[in-house]
Structure formats: C-alpha cells, structure tokens
Image (cartoon, rainbow, N blue to C red):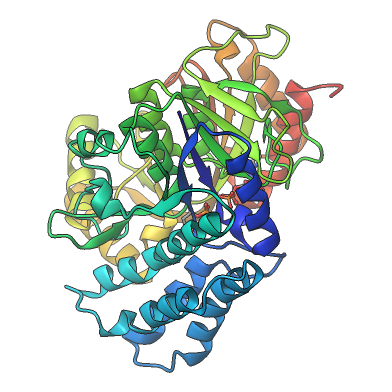
Length: 451
Ligand SMILES: Nc1ncnc2c1ncn2[C@@H]1O[C@H](COP(=O)(O)OP(=O)(O)O)[C@@H](O)[C@H]1O
Ligand SMILES: N[C@@H](CC(=O)OP(=O)(O)O)C(=O)O
C-alpha cells in the first residue's frame, strides 16, 4: 500500500487537480492521500497558506479582511465549480473560513497556526468530494481522528511518537483516505502546524504509521536534480539517493523535500519517491537507505541556503569550554538556536538563522554576550549563505575539498567558514549570500563536467 502526498503546485487549480485524480485512479495501491493547500498557479501568484497568514495578521490588527477572505474562498470555488460539486461544499468552506476569527485561541500563536492549517484542511475536504464525484470511494480523515498528536509548539510542532500506533489502526481502511497535511493537534486538542513546507512531514508520518511500502511525493519537477534548476540550467537528475544525502541537501536548500520528513521514513525504512504530477510516468527520484555509488561522480548534489548570520567573537586566552557554555546559556534564555560554532585559537563564530533576530534582539544579545564573555571583539555579520557539497561517494575520497576550494577561488568566492568532518558525506562552506548562485554553478561545473 502506498501513501501519496500532493504539494501545493499539484493542487493549484482545477486542471492540476484533474491530473491528481488520474494519478490516484491509475494505481489502487494509493490508499492514503495527503494534500497541501492550493499553491501558486503562475509566477507572482500567492499560495493560499500565505493568504491565510495575511488574514490572520489582519484579524490580529483588527483590519478589514473581506478582500483576503474573498481571494481565499475563490481559490476553492474555482475547483468546486470545475468539478460541478454541490453548492453546499463551497458554502461549508466559505463559512468555515469566515468564522475563523470567531473561534477561541489561547494566544496569537495558536490563532496563526489554526488559520494556516485551514488551507490544507479545506483542501482535503474539497478534494475528498472531488474524488467521490470522479467515482473514487474516498473520505476525509482529520488528523485529530487519525490520532496525529504533536508537541505543543503552535507553528513548529513535532510528532508525538505515540501517534504511530493510533495511525496504524487506519491501515486497513476500505476507502481512500484524504488527509490534510501540515498540522496536527496537541494534547489540549489545539491545532499546531509543522514548519513551512510541512505537508511532506505529514505524508511521511502517515506512511510510517500505516506501514506503507512506499511514500510517493508528487511535485512539479521530474526528479530531484543535482542542483536547484532555478540556479543551474538543466542540471542532471538524481534518480537514486540515500536518506542521509537527501537530509543534508534538504537542510541546505533543496526545498523540494522537507528535511524533517526524512525522519519518519528512515525510522520506518520506507522508500520515498519524488515524482512529477505533470509527468507521472517519469521515474522521479527514489530515496532509500542504500544505493550503489558511481565512482565517476562522488558528489550527488550541491545546495545553498540563504538567510544566515554570524556572531564573531574574539577573545585572547579563550577557554572554549566555559565560553561555549556561556554562549549557549545566553542563546537559550532568548529561545534562540544556532547552527554551527566553528572556533580557532582566539576566535569563535556562532552561525545562526537570521530570521530569529531583529535589531532589538541583536542589541540585547550583544550586550549580554559582552557581559558574559568580556570579549576583545564582537560583531554580527549578516547575509551569509551555507553552501553544501553532498555525496555518499565522498567518504574515503581525497582531493574533493581542494577541487571545491579551487573552483570557488576562480570565481572570487570568499570563504568565511569551512566545515568538513562533521559528516563524512558532506562539506560545508559559509559564503556571502550574494555569491551563492555563482558558487553553486562553479561547483556544479567542477563535479559534473561535460553533463
Ligand atoms: N535540487 C532540486 N531539484 C528539484 N527541485 C528543486 C531543487 N532545489 C529546489 N527545487 C525547487 O523545489 C520546487 C518543488 O518544491 P515545492 O515548491 O515545495 O513543491 P510543492 O508545491 O509540490 O510542495 C521545484 O519547483 C524547484 O524549484
Ligand atoms: N501549505 C504549507 C505546507 C506545504 O507543505 O506546502 P507545499 O506542499 O506547497 O510546499 C506551506 O506553504 O508551507
């Protein structure tokens, strides 16, 4: 039995939804369908999740919301009309969207989570009706009834492992179950979402829960490519990759699959196949625990991710143990997380995601670090990107680092951080965000010559 997830691009309008119906009808093994909210129909369009975020913010600021709710409801109406669904379906969706501000929420963060989640919830309700109208025996299954319980972190939740046993109770369902992605409920029965792009996570959780033989993730590309196709033109497709390669690449910018979604798949040892809704017969990319490495191509992929900053600290006679403990304490007090902390004899840089900070938090952070560490120098540098070279074939190979740094030097890409050794299948560089695309292209041309 297979679990299939369709991303926002696959459900953006009625024409895309028709393709999804055909994909489900073409394989009886596709029993659990996870849906995202309608995504972008064209460049410059707005995803329903982003419209819902605007709606939540307008509600919180007590601003008018008619225009935004009109845009949200129109997205579902377009699909309901194309499939000739009864008027009661769109009426139900409309009333649910309009009544979101009238519900009770513990605070603003729970309100935001509940508004966002309704993009997927309404789409799953609608898509179950579309399937029925197309002759498929299908029913909506809410994450609550599926037993999908998550941690109490309204907009960045994680699965509670006890959920898997409850989900398993649905494994023998006699009808196709349509489940909204992206959210679950905490133990107080409040909606909490995963991080953005988190419908991939729901798909993997359901796949592990029902012991699926395969988790198919349908999107808008024929495969996962060795580099982002928006950066490198016509990159080579990766048809087989390992879980750990995908996890590192997803972390470093391959936004096609969420890095957290690999964890349930690894735990359940479930093959993940990324496929294209627009070309479902293409083989796509298979992600499993093992693969045969081609010695000619030790590198599988090159990724870059923007939005990092570094707090640079210089202190002579730096006692690493006490300094890092003090830094971690200050960060924890502000609920901030860091990604890397490379250090030298007198220097240390804390690399963090910049979206956690603003001018006020930065000022406080620097003030508290000065008090805690008495550094000789401290400053924050913004707009770094992390650049990652990943491949199972890199383990036990020499010369890869020098090839990479040579290629970057030829393009005048300055390295602010290098990390090799944390994982035997990857190396990481900190570079200026403005250099990221040039750097990805330089590394791609080096590791995939003549392709
Ligand atoms: N290495 C890569 N291979 C394929 N796609 C990539 C890669 N890196 C980034 N992407 C982007 O990921 C997009 C698909 O992911 P996403 O937008 O989340 O789709 P969905 O709406 O199906 O969830 C592609 O359109 C592509 O632009
Ligand atoms: N709709 C949510 C969750 C998601 O996974 O969406 P998509 O499948 O379109 O990436 C988001 O935009 O974050």
